[in-house]
Figure 1 (cartoon, rainbow, N blue to C red):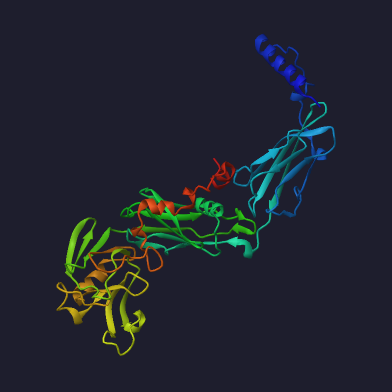
Figure 2 (cartoon, one colour):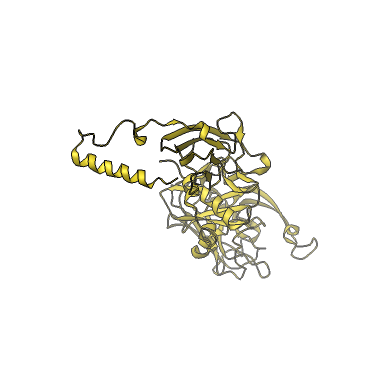
Length: 418
């Protein structure tokens, strides 16, 4: 059926009406197809799912609308969710079939508006709604943000733990694009995929002081891949305090502590001796323990060895999961400021350790320089995130991979409706 002659006639009338003036009804009448009220098109279309019923549609299946009979065709279809976001779709050239080209969102309400046309060009319309089902728990990807709510130092990364592995780059890009971190004041930051179940977020430099940082997920109901859907996640808000940076120089046996760029203390210390050298690099305070029992067996020193030890330790500030602390070491006061005699920790007098313990908080920075030890691991033994250059950090984002080709339709679904 060729509609081009009718379209040309309508355009001709429109031009003529404009030329004669608004009060002239040249070649226009209320019986013209374009001025007619759309009829109910229910009998002209069919759906592949439970549209218009109380049953819930399978979000794993695309929505499809089909024209019924040889004398009608579909002219337009829109599918919109409860938040006002449209689902991308495609209409066949002959108007007989429309189908979604982007995944539906699980557990949400959709409104479908279908426009049709009969053989005489009369317009039809039908508006129906349907709900999509909720995926089972075994299909839900949950995100847990860390750390817990509170106030932290400016070196504290934001973490996102996934309950299921995400390995392919396309799925990683979708997940990452849905995890938002906002800070006030604003900073340029990025996610880094540590492995298939863990992401870290940090800015190019340390966080601003007195900042408010919020992490949220917009993954709920979003199809990530076949058999995996985004689940609900609890948002996280933390704040930062002053910028506390402690720099330990292993060669000069001293620690200098800065608050917001100003030196506030210089402390004589001892670090790791030969064979137990303290790690170089930037570390983040993981926590504080007033009392810790430290034993050589925990770092591989056998009982009975000349290096073996079993000591009560106070005012212990942890900087690695493997057991590196800044702590009180009253037994080595004679070496503090002049020699390195520890098994890897940074030791100081009890008074200095108590001051340090009371001054720092989780997320503050402890940086070791001029040690013969290895470099701090970026991941797996605490937060060594700041030892990764910004260029390499950004390369750890799935959004910078060549395989990531943003889908405009998907981006529209992940963005709030305007």
